[in-house]
View 1 (tube, rainbow, N blue to C red):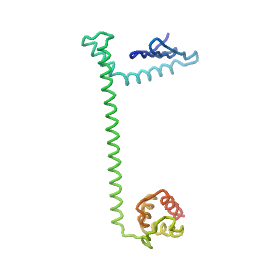
View 2: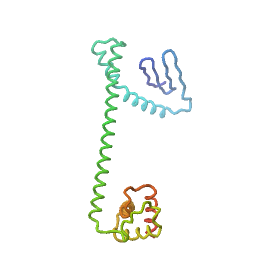
View 3: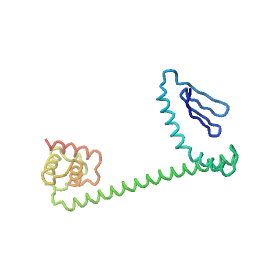
View 4: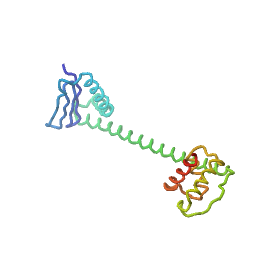
Length: 199
């Protein structure tokens, strides 16, 4: 005995059962069987998943159609279909609006977190009494510093500033060197000398 689930919306129709799956558009249809080796348990599970997905997508259409028929519309009829699709459109718009609001909220959270992190960092610099041995040399590029100079700065930073991690140490050294932006090249060299200074 076959167990299945099927339905249609306008010219589209489809179904799935323990024997196979099929679909069609208008007068055209196609289907395929699972074969004798397919387990009924797996197919039954697929049926449940298919049903849950279909219901979660189209329950507003079903609700609108049911309300229209309950109010006196013929089944099937244009009034039933229009009511169903109005409910479906409201549902899709509500989901889209919810996603938009969530993404806006997340962006706002990230902006606030970045602002707070920058405020905390500036407060840390203001409270810090440590300064590098050679101050800010105002050199144009990280390439203007030798490995020995950067290593000396890393060793001095480790001993005096006592940063809580590599990221804080790199940002400290960036500030000490006078670079306003921590670019990839600067980060790579400072991370390298910081890691090397631990040996």
